[in-house]
Length: 467
Image (tube, rainbow, N blue to C red):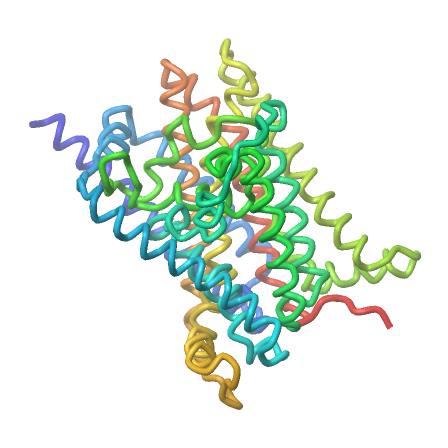
């Protein structure tokens, strides 16, 4: 009884301290800049930049310190092993059929409306379904509730009824096709008028459909959507953060982020690359619309580089930097722990913790965007070929910036907890486990401060357009 009381007391200390840190951090950061994400608006800076950067980094560092000092294996096991299962296989099968049908209908709808509907982005249901429905709302649902994509995926639904399995997937490829394809999609999102020209969006979706179905037919849908499809990888990894997980028997309810400590989330270096890309792409999209980003692009274009290649170069350079920093951290963690475990294995096990950071970044970028534009989505869905002249949009309240910034900080705090959990699973000694976390905590503090610095900068509203 005394031991249980001690566990409850220490768990309460951790929760109370983290809540206090998040409240203080969000308050100071939001005081410096009341808006974040895609809205492009910013408030007046009322505290020094160094103060809120230090506060954001301090939230992560302090939460790591408290977690290390007041938790032990019993608390970790209690948090990550608690689960409530709901056997509902038959209901899942019905739901999968309904969602699969909806996915195919949505795919045909986006292509058809994009080709023949109104050619103004804000008035196009095709654009709003893709970016508000998929890029924002569906992704938010994947990491806050559960991943619906395996059932919703229209390409998988179509591929399963086609003859397939004509070639064996090369094992050496791993998931690198998903990495390459995701880089291409992110680049096209920047340089192609996908959000302003519904017809261009429809053509890109059509090209993606042809390529995806061809690969799934050649290698079997099961193989391709597990290894090579970027959108499936996107939702699978974001879905690992969610409290609802799908099992062979039905659904399982767990604490948010609990699954991230398991060893089947990231099993190869290519998946580490996808995880890092999820973190980097949101940092990148924030950077290129701020003044330093725009000036960087203008300088490189002024030298003579085409704008499209400049954006691609910055995307690849930043991704390469994140990749290098992460693997250096894995190497230093191995040195700190003085373990026989390989650097690669340590990198694979700690990588899922970064998904909590990616989820926090995504929420900060897209929560306000989704709230503002979902009424427009509904308006255009009602009359996709003849939408209203002024689709409804909601204006965000002034305090919503606190919510977005708290999302960034909360994502980092969850990442700290997952790294702490993984270290205790990998290393038998408490001091050894704590030492192994230092390099990754430094990386997380770095990510936090970079993200919050971008938050502090006003958006210039548009990408560079050459004269």
